Image (cartoon, rainbow, N blue to C red; front, side, top):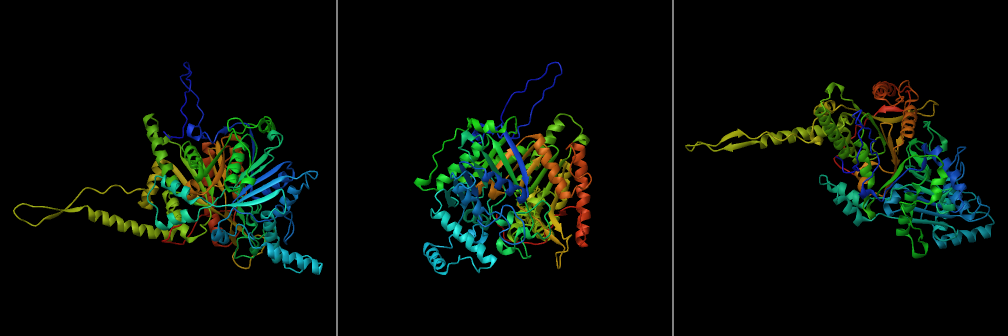
Length: 639
């Protein structure tokens, strides 16, 4: 039995000789007491940046007391709503927070605005997650202001759009970190390497290669993304918050249409970079929250802020997680979405995200849908297969016919790994689920190594046996070698294993086609999947900042929301499936029944096959789904 289960008793109807129990999708054990389940919540899942940032903009403008933001990156020049083709295309983060702090939308009454962002020297310079931070000092600002007074012109006059944008960011960061705006504070934080080392040491897994271990220790990040508005105002009655994957840098703004080229996404120099003239399409989610779960969002913010703040900046706010402010419940009315906030936080020894993934996976009986930026967690794939072995053992013990065993359908949607050094871990994970050949060159390397190891094992089983009468020793075969573990098994063996377990899997990526004729060459662009979404059996979903890799489960600071509301989970599955397939017949899973999910799985397989043919011919596909494929190979491994 999975250790995350909370033991309980279920009464049996003596007349019918039957009982009804509810699966425990969320964490209920005593050790998870810092992540309570809250019943009074109203949740809304927003798909892609256009939807997410528009709602965020509206909510922040309604703030009466406070706006508290945790982010991995922050770009003050990023526009939250966009029209037109040239920066600024709409209201920017920088102007929004400055205006809100000054009381522009609150009848002149200031609002306390706090932003806590990850920043760590060279790593941040490479990631470009805080463009313009620290590039202006007091002397430079003084000289610029002096020149403006002499010339009578603003410094921005005569600058190119790129130069104006860069100056906007540099000046905003300078002012936000030098108390120019009394109600706006921007602070940065870094990871705690000592606590991270302890967290990795607790993981029960094979010894990590030195390069992978070093990358975890020296390149860890604070990766959470939350927004909290008016938590301390009117007892929380008007509070609203967000837990999301969306980063507050301009690359993360896109629409559900994922147009091949959309000028509103911005030019390459505005974001992290892209060889195409214009930032790439990007898929992600945000969860808008009203209700009791916001107490956990608030506690996460306050604890993180106070670790980074000076004595005079600390927030004096206490949290009784068992007794949220009454206004939080009042704000949601009759809405009853059950929700739980889970985290990875090495400083506090919190790994509830990892535990929630294991808990929810253990109840999957019909389908698992995973859409994730990094699918590099082979431990999860092995755990899934072990759960099915246990399930089948129980099925047999109950004397159920094996031909009636229900299949488990696993839909996996992931991008091409962004770095070549991520190929080995991705290959290990997809191979464990029967798709090693989707990375053919890496697969050949692994298969060659496997053949060599198998030969060495066979040779190692031979031994010399002494013979009587002084005759030379005889070379004889020893004990048969042990069955290889999952990662060293051949594709054929894995396929047989999955078939015997009733696990059906597919792995896809998302690509957009140039219907408008904007390209001068290739007609396809990959949609970068930044999502961290899992949906199971129309009964549970989780989303937030956590990727499917060891880094997110044990190292980086992460935060997710889990929800076991069946109506919300089913609605989300239908919406996502229909979006990716462009409403292809039978591809949204219908009611989510076993029969309809099985049919949808087959139709997705057909759609993937057809779309691969269209992509090879550079013709238009149906929707965005294309079989995952990566022909790169690497002997270096990064986490």
